[in-house]
Image (tube, rainbow, N blue to C red; front, side, top):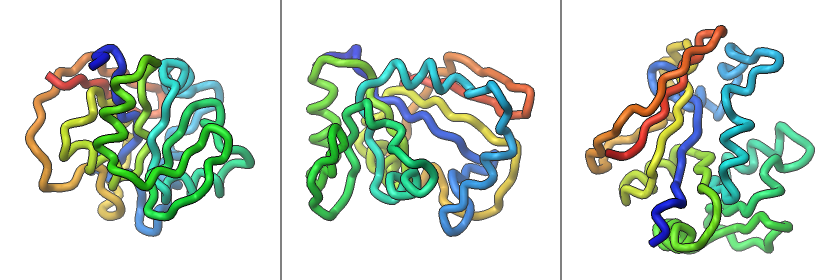
Length: 177
């Protein structure tokens, strides 16, 4: 297997571990919006050529922008409903673990896990995420969609970097130990 191709979760969460407020509300992310600051996203997105995203997250993104932002990447929307591909965006109904293992065998850049929580936790159950870049938003939401669910194997991590930003966001970059 090509071990150079990593599966990387790049995501933002509240300090208490929620990636969305109830009803998939992501308005809390605006707390840290700052002109000219992308929190390393530009550099990160250039390091990937493949995106894995859940159907609900994909559909939410489409309500926010006119054009899917990863249209230049090979994207797999994980869904239960068969649909025809749109350009390089494929609607995948097969086994997620098989997809990821096959992608890791191919030559290419890294693989971006763009959410949502169901996809993240399915990948964690099979220990398929190699790196975590988690941006902590300085807010306690109290409820919503949890980033990490119970019922997955323990995984030891090694902290690579911690970066603090002016608006209070702290970004943690871990690799699997």
